[in-house]
Image (cartoon, rainbow, N blue to C red; front, side, top):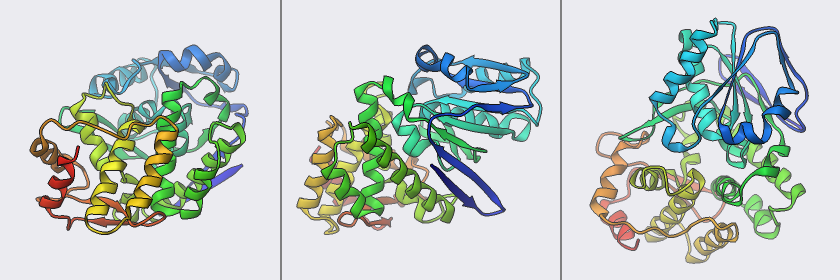
Length: 344
């Protein structure tokens, strides 16, 4: 199936959810991947992509390598292979690969095309769609980056066959995120279906991509409703930063962040304990962590000010209103947030 995403300035591209067909290009192509993905799937992918000048750059695997040093590695490969403004980058991997490849495409010779071929559930349902690119630094996650839309996204469920269980759960967290914030019926469907089932997960991917495309088409640069897709991320990014991106997968940290956000929602009367428990139960069904030990509550709170959504001395929180709706607010008191954090 194909989901089309339409953006301002006549920008439009297709998100194809199906077995990957042959991709043919009459320009220089660089595929960016990592050893894990290439070990499982590179031969399969090389049989699907045709170019008269194709090269591959393999970067280290892991969130801890999502930095400017790795960006330099990708760019050096591009320069050594004399890519020009008509050349193409291909992100072949998970969210880290997609974010860095897109960022390199946005800055190489002031911008070239790239496409996304996501291989993890998290990147298929969320990270590959919408044009957010970036890298981390010591101050936080994705604080360096650009909005740079792909020319196309190709989601092949085949790649999920080798996905470790933890990676699968990390993707489920992002699926749950979209259902809680935008679609009560979808959340109820998730509650009653086994997402380990091959056909069910295809349905969940489709529903998630449709939701993401709908949101991004209304708010490409995250000036309004798109910020709701950061439910769980404001807290989760601090968790990732505190643990140096090595203890939790991104989706796992987001799962913890959703639990924290739900507690704030309960505190200020936006969410019932029953609905918060329903979200927790779904996350735990897929072994997504829902607890975290905060060592220094004040320090944790101060990290919020490094979040891209915060402005001056106000912190923007994305809080669920029951299930199927959410509120974007910078009016939550520090006292209420601190009280919640003390519970962790």
